[in-house]
Amino acid sequence: MSTIKIEVTNESTVLTDNEVSAVVPALQTQVHRDFAPAWGIDADLSFVASSALSDKAWWLVVLDNSDQAGALGYHDLTANFLPIGKVFAGTDKQYGENWTVTASHELLEMIGDPEINQVIFNQPTANKGVLYAMEVCDACEDDSFAYDIAGTKVSDFVYPAWFQPSRTANGTQFDYGNAIKQPLELLTGGYIGVFDVSAGTGWTQKTAALTAAYHSRAHVGSRRERRRIPRDQWLPSKRRS
Image 1 (cartoon, rainbow, N blue to C red):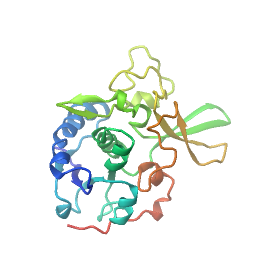
Image 2 (tube, one colour; image 1 turned 30 degrees about the horizontal axis):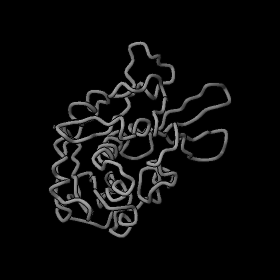
Image 3 (tube, rainbow, N blue to C red; image 1 turned 45 degrees about the vertical axis):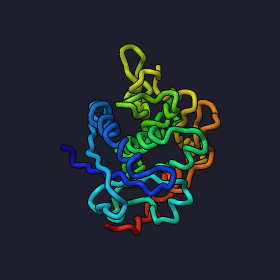
Image 4 (cartoon, rainbow, N blue to C red; image 1 turned 135 degrees about the vertical axis):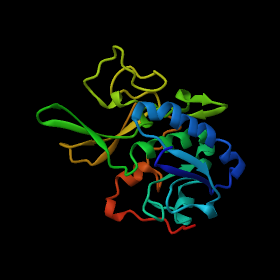
């Protein structure tokens, strides 16, 4: 049993509560069976009605789009200042993406970096260096790299070795699906947030290739948008159980 408790809830109009609750067992299997052994972090999931959300749990909220995220008062933290993840199912449907892959993506990244503040520093020379955001699914996020758990598609994710530039391909696993062959490699449709410390440009996106599914502007309320916002400007949700 994990000390991290995550409540999954549905606030979308494009999915029913039954549709959302039906994927929770597959998400739980991915966390327990696949993610925890690789990263040493585990979590227990449950589906709850939005009216029954607990202030003591982390939240994974399924919404229609980023406009709805603001309108419903879901901001950067739960009501008790705990991590929150957002899944924009309506936007996924608009772009022909699989919302369960997105839910898996957001879940794993929330577990891996709940405060959205972890980075690794790649310093190839004495006067050059780039910070890489500790996002575990971005590099291999495209639906084509997803895998199946009991009929539910879930996101591929990178292993810790992906963030270790000195690692070689010999006997090293860089992602769950074994599609990545070297550290910091981006698969087709993948991207990663980078901060060039010498350029002074702030957070930018390094991409493998722009695809129809890639959105260059971060959704309001998304992890990409929140990473650019100073922590003292984060807002807790007004929703309480």
